[in-house]
Amino acid sequence: MSWPRRVAVSMAVAAVPALLAAAAFGQGSILDQGRSLLDSINKPAPTTPGRSSNLSTAEIGSGLREALRVGTERVVQHIGRPDGFNANPEIHIPLPDTLHRVQSALKAVGASGMADDLELRFNRAAEAATPKAKELFWKAINEMTWDDVQHIYRGPKDAATQYLKAKMSNPLADAMRPIVDRSLADAGAIHAYDQMMGRYRSLPLVPDAKADLTTHVLEKAMGAIFLYLGREEAAIRENPAQRTTDLLKKVFGAAG
Image (cartoon, rainbow, N blue to C red):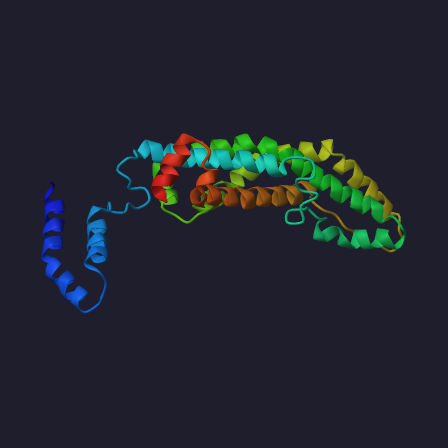
């Protein structure tokens, strides 16, 4: 028997007179209190996240990266599909604020369908761009340092997502910009925008208006990806059913 266990048992024996006295005054049976005391002796000491003796530093790092890869895959499947953005009021991409006056002017002459069509194409472009962004996110995930991993592993339920958002938003935006550009063109948004603006400028006395379509869709798409990635990360940390691989079960089971 180890020295700490011998000390604990000695303390338990020393506590027997107190248990007898308590029973005499009706404060619970000797059996119940004795069982509770023995349970407290035999119960293993709790571990803290990142300090499980069964986990190596490599496993913690691999587990966290795998959680983010799994989370990204789920996000892509959820929003990177037809109507993933368009039919979801939480992340549906509206027209930019600078085009609201265009939309109102066209509505006044019965041509609001042009603005509605452009808005739909924004969402179609985001739906098409999201799956192509997955590899960019995975690359950023693989480049996390061990210091990053330690901080994230002990952090709040969306710590990894917030790390990626803070550290990688600008590089990811630069990498995703040409993807969104192509998606907007493929979805017909550029042509629809040109047609809508041509119709708007044909109206009398309307002020000038313009919009950066790529920046607008890019910012909205990345915001949606980070939003849903944070939820997936939290689910993996908190819900054992979401830990779909042996490594995730081991790492986040130890952290729970």
